[in-house]
Image 1 (cartoon, rainbow, N blue to C red):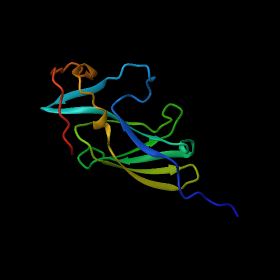
Image 2: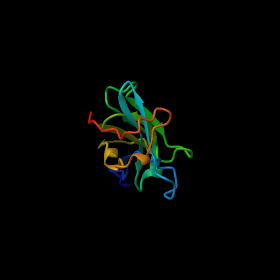
Image 3: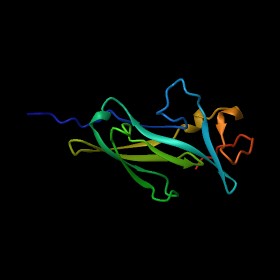
Image 4: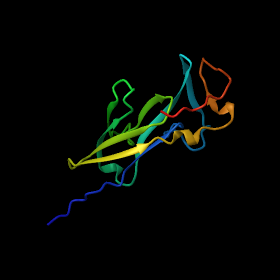
Length: 140
């Protein structure tokens, strides 16, 4: 009799820093202003020792997002099932993870990127709409 694992050692993570850049790369927070609201570029991705066994993940974002359910397949070009979003606040992301055996695992993750936001303005990349001021994060 073969035992089937009932757990998958995979976690949902988030960051405002591109997780694909080398650690020595300068860390910039991508920010944009739209109609008086500041949005942050956030990477949501999977990590953990069982990541090679993942087939795909369906992230469920806050209901205010257009198309809040987003499915990402694990591929050689996306080995962490990254999803990039622009958001103004923090919220709980639900993830339905499908493994290569056909099993499904569910996990919730409260975004924590706000704890990474640097206090100095020069660490922010405002692109063309630079306001020169550090935006305040508002929770959703």
